[in-house]
Amino acid sequence: MRRTRTGRAGGSKVRALAASLAIAALAAACSPAAVAGPSAEERDAPVSMTDDPVIDTVDAELTEEAPSPEPPPVEAPFALSEAEVYPNAKRLAADVAQALTTYDPDQSVEEVVAGLDAVVDPDRLAEQARDLHEPGAWSRGRVIYPQLGGVTADRVSVMVTTEQRIGDAAEERRETRTLDVRLRLREGAWVVESLASDGGGPLPQLDDLPDEARAVLEDPRIELPDSARWDIIAGEVSPQLLRLMARAAVQTPYGVVVLSTGHPFEVFGTDRQSFHTKGRAVDIYRVGDRLVIDDREEGSATYRFLEWFYDQPEVSQVGAPWALDGYGGRSFTDVVHQDHLHVGVRTD
Image (cartoon, rainbow, N blue to C red):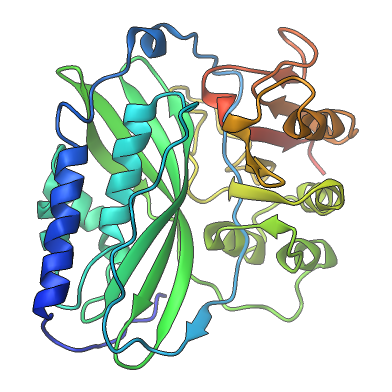
């Protein structure tokens, strides 16, 4: 169960102005001009449903900090790479994730959602985002990366890894969640359909974790959202996948978007359960200091990392910007897997 804290009532004029500016910026970003539908190239791009992108998330201890007397400034919007596919969908999903995790002590979740444009059902979205909101506390959201979780002709899943900084008069902490933001096309523009996952909730750190779990959780070379950490602590991740992740960190540091929580349950647009929700897959958005979306040249560091995964005997599928063995092999590519490496393992 999530902890609830009480804080100062009301908000200063400075905070109110900051919130107004943030809402205005989000409204502009989500306007029909800024959130146009996909280009002809985006719509025509072939979409393979061979695999699904989801990465388990590992449990992380909450970072306790000295409480701030006033809420900090609102974070700048996420800067998308010029190489992104489905950039309009990603822009909207990132802005919505940041807005849902940015509020002042005197704001309700309903008020936060009311400040958003392009929402199909505000009441439903407010209910789905309720666990992201702590009454009486302030929160500031920062998007780490918005990764595609799946696409169809008129719907998109964007898994947005978001850091949430939460504080009140007593304490301050940070949580990093992978939110599954669902969008659909309406009259040629993307709109918010739902928040399919809020990224889960904190679990207590266990003293008797298996060695393979502790090796991943404690490795500074593996960047993990708390959603993934909670998956690992809950025992929902294959030990074989954890051992592979630990060996991969010896090759190069890397960043994870999702293990299980925060990923669509099925391969998006199908009725087949995802390897992620079986605890057998990880999605990697960063290799070293390079985003996968920006490192798609053959022979790049990301390409070599993919080759390493492909050579591991326990790996049963790798989705990436490249297919190493052609159509129908263990390695595949499609429009969804341009921004990450999906690695799935065989059963233990």
